[in-house]
Length: 289
Image (cartoon, rainbow, N blue to C red; front, side):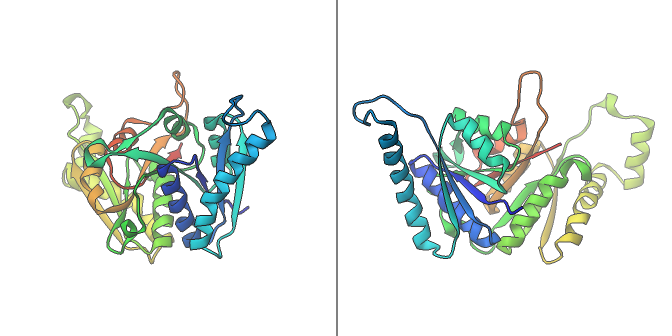
């Protein structure tokens, strides 16, 4: 089954930026574009009291945005769905059948980064497929040659397989370099054991051990995507800080989040949360086991 690239639109500047980003990504991957708008009937004099008339008014507003995109990409296959329901439920459902879901988010420069509303936060935390946050003002020039797809890698190969695959597949479509970033910190004294010390001694120390772990995680992706240039980056520090230090070279930042629900519900995760709030490029959040 061919999954489309889906954009959630709401008529805002950031929603239009997400739509433009999604259209370019669909063209690059040779996939159809699906445009989704969540709509709720409101009994309001200015909006009109007739349900179907109100739906028609909303649909025309969405269609106007889509016409601008099809004008720039005349060969792109585009489907439009104006769905009555709550935005979180509609968008999470749309994401389930998509290659990825693109959403807009307001941003005010490098310091503030993304301003995530409650809808965006819930969709990212609950979506079963990757969600990409695009800031208002995002431009195609940000995808120029030389800028990389930067992805965070943690744990062993199985822990980051889905996140790395998304990054490599995206880079392949863009003919971009993937920069795989692994952060490490000194473990507490009580975490040392004879077994762990033996592994570290065999690797030659902590940093060589981390470099070896990163190389092992990346190796299967290098084999599957031999034409994608790869840079491996290992640095001491918190994962969020190390990733953000590389954001200036990124056309897209890719981070993972655990897909399982906790006792307090679905969560985005501290690394993804930090990157989303401070990166000044589009950020993809990829759920994984």
